[in-house]
Image (cartoon, rainbow, N blue to C red; front, side, top):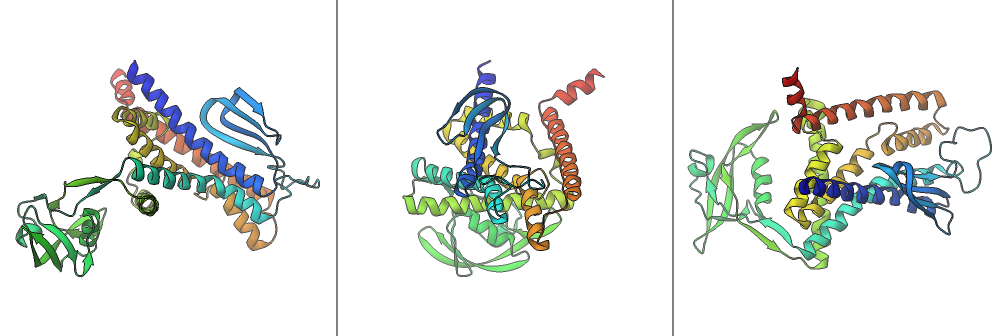
Amino acid sequence: MLDLLRTIAAFIIDIGVLIFIHELGHYLAARSQGVTVEVFSVGFGPALARFKAKSGTVWQISALPLGGYVKMQGWGEESSTAPARPGSFAAAPLRSKAVIVAAGPLANLLLAVVIYAGLFMGAGQITTQPVVSQIQPGSPAAASHLLPGDRVLAIGGTAIANFSDLQQIVAGHPDTVLDFTIERGGTTLSLPVTVGDAMLDGEKIGHLGVIGTQSTLRRLPPGQAIAAAFQETGRQISAWFSGLGTLIMQHKGLRDLAGPLGIAEISGQAAAMGLVPLISLIALLSINLGLVNLIPIPVLDGGHLLFYAVEALIRRPVPEQAREAGLRVGVALILSLVVLVTFNDLARLGAVSWFTHLL
């Protein structure tokens, strides 16, 4: 029961923070562009708690915590023949509309940077050292006479700061001889290393056969922490696009997609490990939420931005029929995705196996 309560609490915290920041981005951008915001809601459905600010915006927490919205004056009235009211979204110039819509996903990406910077300053940044901890028998590393305990200082003149740097260079040079500068027993050596090859998702990459497990935890000063936070966010964004490409081109990773149940399970596991893993998960989920919303599918923020881009090119609003057709396609895609991730969640929880066995 305690595990269940912790999972529910962690899920509510994760989703609540992500939704609030996302909608706050829309809200602040709307206010900055002179657009009146009527309602700011975390969640859908009946309001559980609400108050009206001096600005006239109603802030509320609603019953279903699986989303949220910012209701702007004149939203959805762009195609209306009636004159747009001053201060409404419909009356805003195209550039302002794009800024307001894009601000939500960008707020999620910025949240990840802020979280990572805070973690690197407070808890510290974990760095895997470029030290060879283990060597696989018969691997290219063994044939090139690398030894456990070797610290890689540079490869071909490129300084190596961590094990990830080593991995990236090796992966990009299959079947190549690289000049390693290593430190062994207090002595600096130059060693030619022949990199082998391996196949990963149908692509040939370099293979060395070494494992690095020596890690350090170091608190960073503010400047370095912010720079490292941008680097980590960029790395996660790159990994997201790489995964999306694999999903689209090779149809791999469909079973790994998670929905609300999967996120709740992961949130509970992170909360069980402590506050830092839970906060790190919020940063990762925030990046995913921001990028998913930028996908150019009608209904999502990216779909609206796509319509605005087309409008800027043709110099007139997208025809209403085209908008409605796009929205129908978008809704169908989103519903299909919901069905898929729900099935994946139930399968991971064992419900599908249980039901199959029952039949």
